[in-house]
Length: 66
Image 1: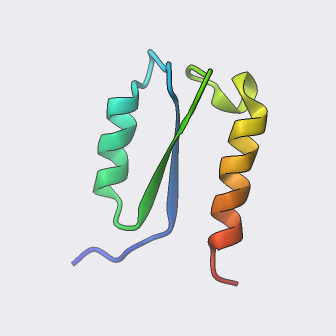
Image 2: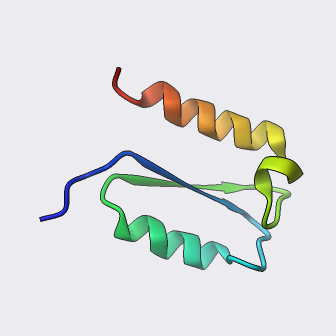
């Protein structure tokens, strides 16, 4: 039985190297995972849309238990 593990899978909505469908499959295989698609970003969402990436990461980290 797989244990849930808080995990954040981030993908650029326009990522051609690792398509969003691959990120969706990865998130489905991790119990407790959350998938976030970053708009206006390709393979490097943290560089291409840093504000959206930081918001997604911050929201995820804020919800983790202490």
